[in-house]
Length: 274
Image 1 (cartoon, rainbow, N blue to C red):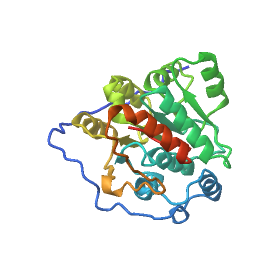
Image 2 (tube, rainbow, N blue to C red):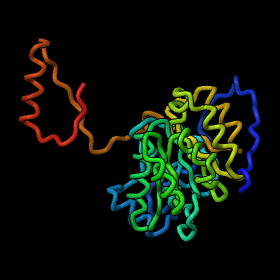
Image 3 (cartoon, rainbow, N blue to C red):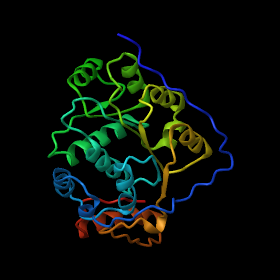
């Protein structure tokens, strides 16, 4: 069997680049007007979504159109569902080849992305496998041999599967880099570049990151062609249905008892305590 073809990565100086939202970004306020397939819409509403978040309103459509996209967004903005919905819309489920590759900094995030894709694609008969370190290698081999539309994984394990020629890249049309800043912080830069070199030349790239240091922008210059830039500002992060309040406790030793009183008084299924 011949070795996978390797693509060249070019370098460009981006020391003076400033990130800003592209002017032509369209805001689409409902899922129904995004042109999504019916079975995907069923999955979106069954998952509990009613209205797209700020990043979903701006990012889903250009990703579906095949544009390279840089999205700067914090956790909790709906970013995972953003690219998951776009991925599912772009799949040809009659083709049992890997068409989309998602890279994440941690095993937990890779598994979370897999679960979101499978849940949103519940009515589409989609195959998605989490390819992560610390798991049984034989399971990866079996799942990939069966055929997976989407592979969500960590850079090291994914590159290992490509190098073994178990994960075939010939049909991949989209690469998603989630939490790209965290991947660089964890030292995955070279492994990301290694994976990218084995992808088809026309592969669409979607990069999501909470911060965009120059090292990230340097990466985008190597991987992307005329990307759309989307920055979700903090005043656009609407947290509908979430109530926040505080209690001023005069003495440190009263805090725990006050917290217990709150939990006895209020019906709270989920809460964040500082």
